[in-house]
Length: 185
Ligand SMILES: Cc1cc2nc3c(=O)[nH]c(=O)nc-3n(C[C@H](O)[C@H](O)[C@H](O)COP(=O)(O)O)c2cc1C
Image (cartoon, rainbow, N blue to C red; front, side):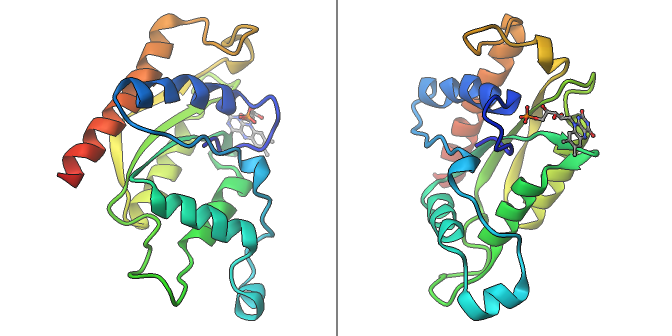
């Protein structure tokens, strides 16, 4: 999943490239478009009266069903996008039917990527995302892949012009599958 709802999102392009690595490593993946799951901003009163919004429930179920996450996160003011943080927050909320706290995240593995027009490629936001995920119990792979100068980094078909960078993204996804398998065994 990319943490951007934008149709032409650089991070959506990057997640598609990286996700090849999941399949090459023998894993199965579900590509989630955050734009397909609009969720109201978290409000404790809303949660108290109505519980989790329908799309938050759907995403929480999807997260629970998967062993690992591949996230490509845009950097907004040195952190992550509001739409992505809001999603992470709702999915973290407990429900009576949960077998344990933070069931969607605990013991899972995450691989992180980012793309941004800036030189750092969204790296600062990834350290924020790493911290959030670790706090909800997810193991985050040490390596991270960033694409700077994103406005000029992708070709017309959505591929990365820099083959080595594309290979790094694919390789991160492979590491995600391998690490997930090791942790499960
Ligand atoms: C509110 C806001 C804050 C931003 N802050 C940063 C930033 O701190 N660093 C950065 O590299 N880009 C920043 N950007 C630019 C985004 O990286 C750029 O919009 C990028 O295209 C977002 O990712 P996407 O293409 O996947 O939607 C910001 C954009 C917005 C809208």
